[in-house]
Image (cartoon, rainbow, N blue to C red; front, top):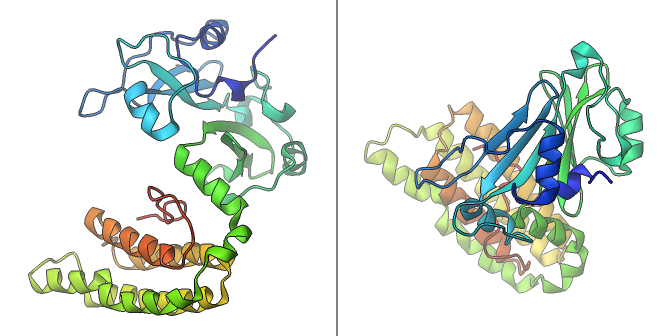
Length: 304
C-alpha cells in the first residue's frame, strides 16, 4: 500500500517509507547538503525534475527547534535529514499531464477552483495573486497545503508543508480564542496606554539625530501615529474583553506597517523589526491574552 504524501512529512530520509518512496520515483537518496554557517544541514533538496517531484529536508539540529523531536531517528551520529516540504509540479500548464503521484484529498491537476474547494472541504486561510495565477493556502492540523491555481482557475501544482511548532500553537490559539475572553482584564487598558512612552520611534528619532540616514521624518511620524492609534484601539478592545477582536487587531496593525515600510523605501530593517515585534507582542500580552512566550504574533502577516 502506497503511503500518503502527507504521512511522509516529518520522516527521516533513512526511514523505510521515505527510502521506498524515493526509490520508486528516482529521487537522490544522498542529496548534496545545504549547510548554514555552523555547518548544519537545512533546506536540502532531493528532486526529480522530469517527474516534477521536489522534497526539502532539514537536518536534525535545525529541524528539532522548528518542528519538535521527530518520531524516530535512525542515525544519531550525524545531522540526519527530516522531510518538511513536498512540491509536486510537473509543468501541467504546458504539458497537461496528470500528476505522477496520487495527490492528497484526491486532488487532480486540472481540477477547477470549485472542485479544489470541495475536495479540501475547507476554506483557504490566505489567497494571493501571483505570476501564474493564484496561490491558496489551506491549513490542517499537521500541515498546510498550497494549491496553485492558474489564471484559468485550474489546479496546476501543489506544495505541502509540515506545520512548525509556532504554527501549531497559533492554530490552537485561534481555535480557542473565544474561550479566552475570561482572561482579558479590562483594568489593563490603562497599562496599555502607558506604552505610549515606550514607542520604538523614540529610539528611532535618537538614531536619526545621531546621523542614521535610514530614517526620514515622514517614516517615523507615520509609524508613531499608527502605533499611538493602535494603543487606543487595543485599550478599547481590552475594556470590551473581546479576545477575537484583539487578535484580529494584530493583523491590521502589521499590514498597515507593511504599507508604511513600502512607501518609505523599506526602512524597517533587522533592528527596527525586532523593536516593532517586541513592542506589538508586549502590548497584546498586556491585555491578558494567554500566548506562548516564544510566539511572534506579527510573523503571519509582516513583510518587513
